[in-house]
Length: 254
Image 1 (spheres, rainbow, N blue to C red):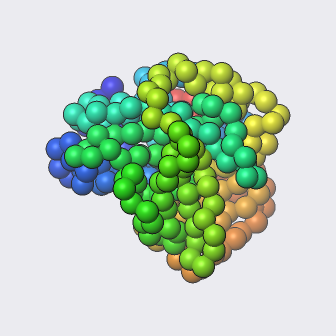
Image 2 (cartoon, rainbow, N blue to C red):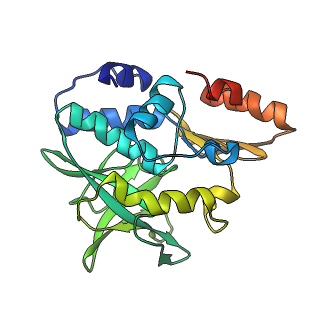
Image 3 (cartoon, rainbow, N blue to C red):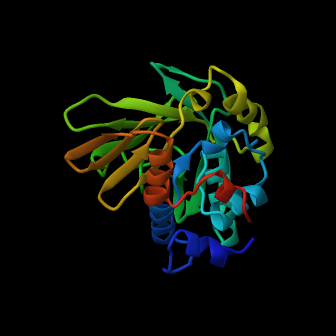
């Protein structure tokens, strides 16, 4: 595992001093380079909670992943660069109520002040959030961290609409192994969103590109373009052209 190769993967060439500005640039570079995707679940490839396996997948194979993969790997990079990182468990809001503990992973990073980083939640904030910021405008949405009893809640809203809670978390430190049960659930349970819908999504400099089972969606500021995918061959072509991910034979190669 090499930090230089990781930085090359995300296209980062800036300063490496463990500051809030460096964290912001790294976080943004990661979001613009590494997609949120659950392809392995549909390809029948088990996702094992191992940072070296995540490094091989994301850095060497040019893949993406979901939260346990992307955030734990990003935590490794930040730690190697001198940041103090704490892994946290988050509970995602589903239709007004929170899901189980360890449903999602987020990171608290000490960078002059504590900041929340999250490169594994799909369409989310592109720059880390501070605990003292009530409303931050990022790429078409307001984001906020607020206290709720003993929990913190990450909320999002569009201009003119109400705040919508995304997930809650405590500041209790966790380990990667603590997420083992939910990692299995998300790969095997029919109740998991990841077994019901294949998705690959990445932020772009102008918005976001998302490929689901039968649609390609390109969002750029006020413009949203949807294209129906004609079949499997076109689906793999779109995955390659927009995300750099090839067919299963390429996925399995070193």
